[in-house]
Length: 147
Image 1 (cartoon, rainbow, N blue to C red):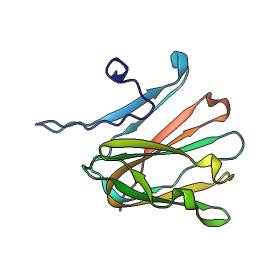
Image 2 (image 1 turned 45 degrees about the vertical axis):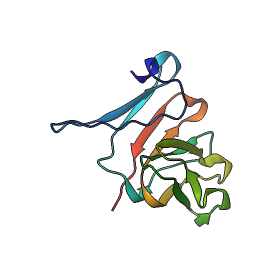
Image 3 (image 1 turned 180 degrees about the vertical axis):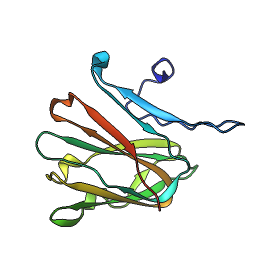
Image 4 (image 1 turned 90 degrees about the vertical axis):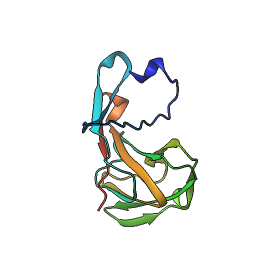
């Protein structure tokens, strides 16, 4: 439980071990009435695909990025909807400070029941997608796929 160590909305974790382990992230809503989890990424990458997302009908889609590097990352998120590719100026060349995490709510950029995201970066980062149902009565999270 990280709550006893940090108090922030922007937390990412690096797990290291001298033997093989499997790491996952679990997140719980207020009162633990809902939760979601995701397996950890095996390594940071420069390209990530996040196929699922929805920003219509009261749903929320967040893209969560971790920069584990000692230098800033410059990241672009390209959104793919049923209407085609959307290049959003505010999601182009976004700087993620060294050794930090940032979250991006896609709802302010598109309204669609079908939103996929391509994350590209000049240095290797980790990307995850969190999706919440109307009123945040449920949530779902998933690490991205990197080719």
